[in-house]
Length: 265
Length: 286
Image 1 (cartoon, each protein chain N blue to C red):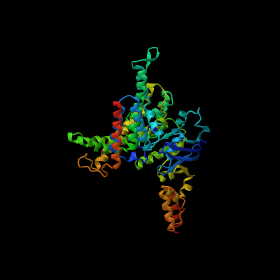
Image 2 (cartoon, chains in turn green, red):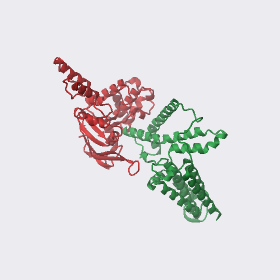
Image 3 (cartoon, rainbow over the protein chains, first blue to last red):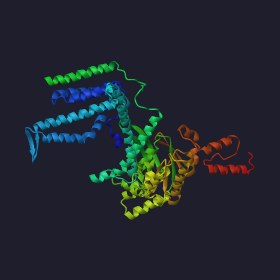
Image 4 (tube, chains in turn green, cyan):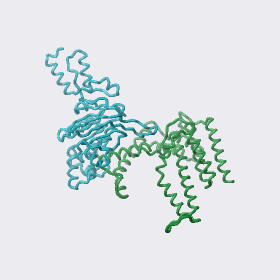
């Protein structure tokens, strides 16, 4: 059940995408997200689809696994689609009572749905192919110029890597506590909204307590190993760009350029 | 027959790279009133197996019968099963959540839909069984010591008055005294209430001392299922699985090798004592 949440998890297979420098993947994700907002027309979306499918194939991540991750955003997707569908002004196609579907609404809703799905697939491709450690290393190195204006980059990336590291731990813990309470007859599924919310108390209280306990334990363990922030800290495997990374940057640039050119046509 | 397991298999995260077969065609019969020890190395499938007993996990194939009724049948009452098969997880004190000890123990019986009077009665009886007296009832469960917390948590399951009690390493992380107290209480439950008990443990000494039957799991399969004496005869195979026999059997074996004519089929301290005195009674000469 709860183990099946795939969004934000690392998927361990060996592919070119997996071996890329995390900075390339971060920039790539950013470029892809921006490119989706360039315009709402068929051509750019066609290019984005080709790009996404190509990366997906190279990354060797099964499509089934990605679709499973999409399940968690269905609710969000429905809301944005419905709002766009019914609340856009324009040429009316169908009308029931006070609700109307317009041509523009239909167009906007479908683009919105595709955009949201691509956003999730694109960014989860990054987390599927990059370990949390690589990701924060990439962030730290990529953002290090900001240190000049006193942004605490090391601290931010450390916090991020701890947060990411804790996601699976807390998921597992939730699963465990849920089972323990179910063994005591707790019911998390039936009842109305209020009853459901109330039934979460036996889950949330132990979960918070355990999160705090783990946090103090971790702080203690870090101090015991003389952690004192980023100053003077070296890396065992410093990030260095390789040939493939440069090629990937080239492809990204080319992709972005084509996307912008479609706007001019 | 209280619980019958037929050809049960279970795979975590089926159909993905993370797929792990945790149980592989398990067959098991658990009669009423038995005290059973379940041992196995970490990752051998013990915890997975016991979560099947009250339907928290659903086998990918095979079936489980509770009092001859298939628990995977559509009309089977899962909630009833969970009240009849009490499951105490590892570190059960992590599930405490109420503001005071008494209310927390009431959580289980309350979920069974009993009357307020019955709930109180059961909670009190359960707390009595684990030796928590009334002076603690109004305290926050988080202010108790580790051993007390654990006993309150066990009482939380006992308050549902299960027929079968399954405990996953109930003594992990406790000091020797806390450990002995918990085990003695569990043993009392077995003797007084004739409860069927399944004890998962890493401590061969505890197992040898209390249980009448041992089930050994290794890599998702049932390897041995017999009395402690019979199982511990295979100490070399057990060691290969990352387990061991109780310390006493090693001492007795060493004594025999040195020419001391003692019965090698000894697993607990008290048995060893009797056997040694028996030999020494003959003049102590080999």
